[in-house]
Amino acid sequence: MGEGQELPPIPADFEQFTPRTARALVRGGYRRLGEVQSASDAELLALRNFGYLSLAEVRAV
Image (cartoon, rainbow, N blue to C red):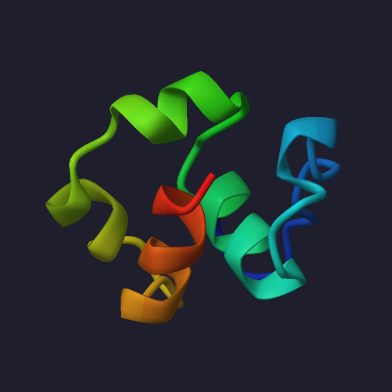
């Protein structure tokens, strides 16, 4: 996503996550919980503003 572009809406699947985590996932191109669950830890940690706390939040689901 380039500067100044609006993010797509947060999918309903991501409402259980903090806004920061949900936005990082959307920005990374994830739209479904299944996509997130099948992604590796390294892929998720490579996302902007997605750190170990976000990873723990996602893996707890």
